[in-house]
Image (tube, rainbow, N blue to C red; front, side, top):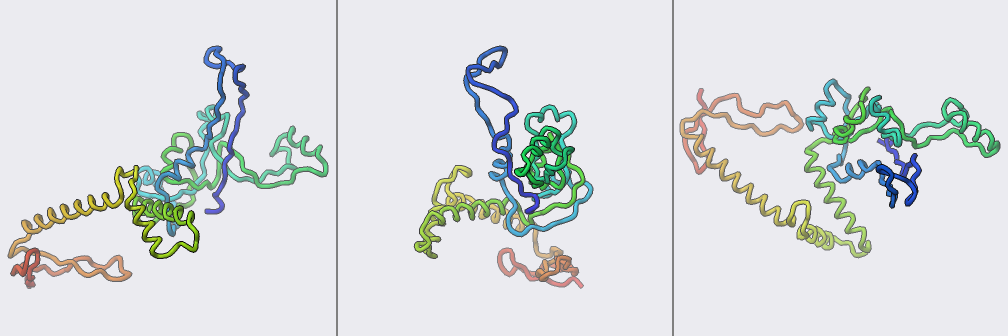
Length: 290
């Protein structure tokens, strides 16, 4: 993970423009120059669900890109990517792939004759070989956030996929938990450490649950009430269905207790039983059919 952490340039301009002088749109005078960060996808990724907790590393396999596009895999993918030839002109002002590479200032073939001569003229102050952040048309072993890969497929070609890190569990639920943890941490760090007690943490959580959240259009407490109502309605529907489907004399299997650390254990009984008597609502005595 650490090998793939890279920053990004704040501003890169290869065009010169000056307000009240530069002509645009058929000769009109430009009145204002505004620069936007071209790497805004980083902020987009932070605002969405992110893997959290312990990650598992798995080897890549054929068809992994299709599984990512179908939302079957969530995590990070390490692969080589490049800009297609037909899009290189489009990205000529700022190439789209950022990476950390070793720049050897003593090699003219790497930095070009102009910069080589400039560095050589500095004599004792010559720059030494060092790792630098650059932007490029290609990158090797780039770690990509899997939802971001759907956007990248329009501008880059992923290839030579090494492995991927997958977050076990439901990433929707894990993302919500992670956002709550960040919010709670942010609120507590604003307080004096001497004030933070178990009661204060409970008060902060209660305040969080009673605060209106724009993302859900209500408070978490109100949302919890709606979820409970939905669960009760669902349970009633299931109870009515079971009551209609299971009658005295029906042949059934019963579900076995889960076995610890045994994913391949049987889930249902091999023997077939007959419902012989109703003990109470939705509870029956079973009789072995043998």
